[in-house]
Length: 212
Image 1: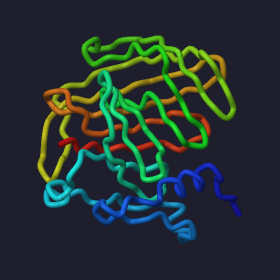
Image 2 (image 1 turned 90 degrees about the vertical axis):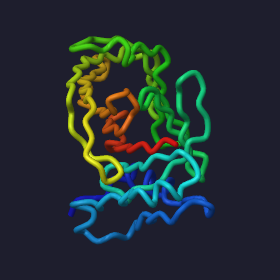
Image 3 (image 1 turned 45 degrees about the vertical axis):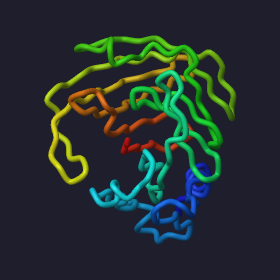
């Protein structure tokens, strides 16, 4: 029998509790069935009514196959959005891309950011510096090969839309780590969703943005 990934369980536990002032959010069931562990949960449906009734900008977050939760936008500082849980865990995004986290079992911090939507036309290569925690890795070279695809169809708040997609093939040579991430944007460049692997010991993170 396969053992449960302790990192995944800890992440699910940390994000399970939502503020009492927020709309109802399905909590993570640590004792979920083997079927749920194998195939995951369906994401919470964000309808137009759900969006309209929510007072603040928010993001729907899912870590691996765990139950999704809602993060609320707390601050915007120099283009960086801080999304927080009720347990003061923070996910920082810039252009819809996760650039920093606080309070996770394994945090990241891209300290020398080069990746910018304004610089991405067709295919671009960026070199950045990144820190990991637990275990620590400082000033690692984060290389990303970024490709833009226009006229990308997606569904948002029950409507079919067209925007653009960015795929990022990233690597850290020092630890032999490679990953592929995906970002979807509206035609005006607003982030719609992110599918990103930010750390070797964390599951993939899916973020869907609902900005007021």
